[in-house]
Image (cartoon, rainbow, N blue to C red; front, side, top):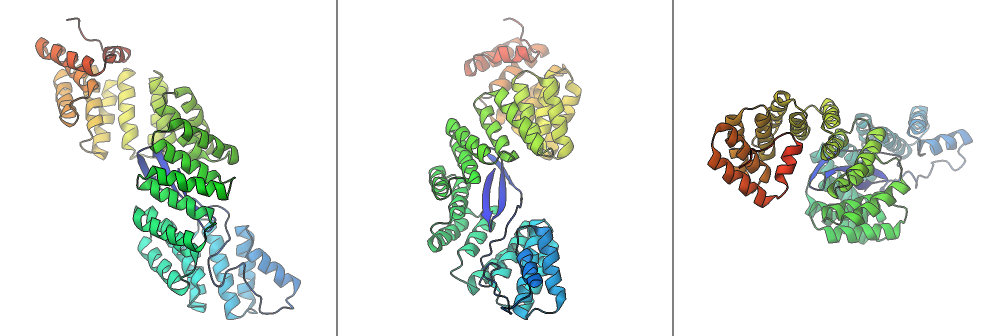
Length: 440
């Protein structure tokens, strides 16, 4: 999982595999504002404020969102604050709602703050964050642009806008904003982390690794930067370095399900299925609704020849995420191996409905048809799979066996021989899966 920092609030890109990413959001305790009227810089209108009023302001600006909402509400409803302070109270309450994931309420409060103080750069920036969390990127960009126009030396606003650009895949524009954020605030570890994530998104792994290293130099206990550098090492196939970084990230933050998941993916890439399963176990314990972790644990169990258990994992992945094409494809293979080819064919059909013309799913359906003793259908699927990838040893070998079943001895021998030249142990693999070619 690659993590972007946004005013001490994380915006995360979940790292499913070294090559497959999707966007999601998570938020945690935050307060630092990039604003000319920042909460930290608040000056009460009366220097002789009563203790109760001072206490309310302290809680309004404090790290506990529930206390903040209650205290800010008290200040707003008191009728004793001036326009500027009321704007700050609405802004602070909006931050608290945003932390709690209540983005609509947050936006309403930021609207109030802006109505009271039309040049409140921080409120525009914070409203943009809430819009981004809701996926309303056009509105978010407009607000970030306004915040930067009102306060062009605000490193935070450039950083936040860069995060939003990264979230919609505009990595070049993200890098440009992070460059400006770093120019304005060279010791901002979060901006280096964010730029590293954008470089990783661009496939520029060496630059990404350098930026994550700079972030770690500035902030040695920066768990997210270790985890993100692990992602960049994984993406560049430097698996041992990746595992070392993931392990450090877990030491710093042992409750981070995504880093356990990513380390598991990397162990799986190294062929260490038992270690991968242990990490996926921890990932699913910490985040029981993470469909990707169940899917990958199923893959690891398949690799160990435990296809009955793998099917159970794919079942859970599909229960959590009913449109999970990859899990249907994987369950198709494990069901076919486990002796349920009819259900396997249904799974591959569903995978292809969700992801039409997917060559691996077509090839696996060919294997399921082979197990079901439908040689004609199997040959058709293997033909289509091989049209996309002529050097797929599994499809060649499977088609050869299907041709044996169909009585085409010469065609079978040609396909089986070609498959063995591509992968010397292909016959052993198929034998483990319950399919054995007839002797020549």
